[in-house]
Length: 233
Image (cartoon, rainbow, N blue to C red):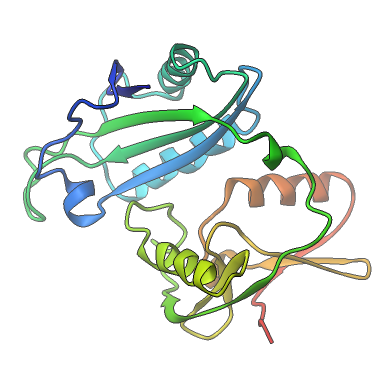
């Protein structure tokens, strides 16, 4: 398989970053997980909106050629190179640069694109439901960084491990006030009668691309959806 680092394609066995990369050292980075179907990325624009707003919030220094159009071209080229453009799972990782926490002179954004053949079963509707529980060992803070899909993914990594150990399909992650932030892999929606609910953005969950897409579709259909704190009890 091949990867794309800063626009250059190479084999995935080659070194891709220095030991002092800030994303590796401190989790000072971001990532997007994007789906491609038949050479198209249906939610690409929403992914780019989230990525570039997150980059602005974290004050990353971006090169002039780092644009949504350039990333789209690189992703399509890589998926074609790896023979998985018909159905692909793509990870786009972004790092602030190299150096220590207080060093800024070497802050230069780096990006890495990886892709793999997608799993066709993920396109099938699960009609059996999910077995889920609550992750008891960590709580999400509620601040301006909580919504980011950060390279520091520790709470979700441990929640996913806990879910597997309990033989659950997924695990709810709570915030510091005991309300639902999200799950280890997704945002959370509820339907009760005619009413649709989802956790409010202020509750510490990642600002999911699918979440934003669903909210827009629901409202465009003339339905109402309420964003609010949600208890798991």
